[in-house]
Image (cartoon, rainbow, N blue to C red; front, top):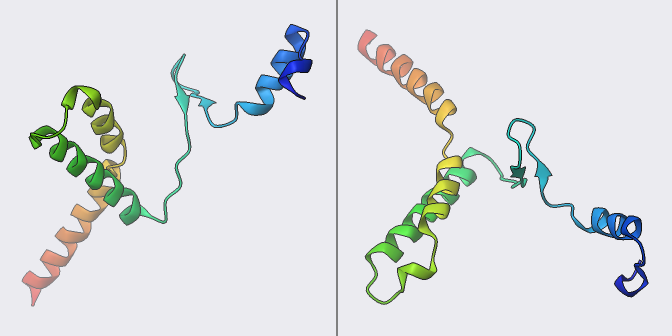
Length: 105
């Protein structure tokens, strides 16, 4: 349907629902939306988070950039969401298991 053929509110709703597909409503929080990001694994996801943090640090410490034009807080919020906090407990447990095995030798 082309936009010049939209005559009614129902036609507009059909047009809009066909085009707005990226954001999905969050089930647990009213008014929030979710956008899916795909990764090749935990390493890929964590590397993106680290790179976002590095980018923010470069902006903060740079004399050449106008920091007011970049919303560093929102970029850091995204980076925090990419850090696999719950999964890090598994790494700690593996480390303790390996450490104990080395002590037994």
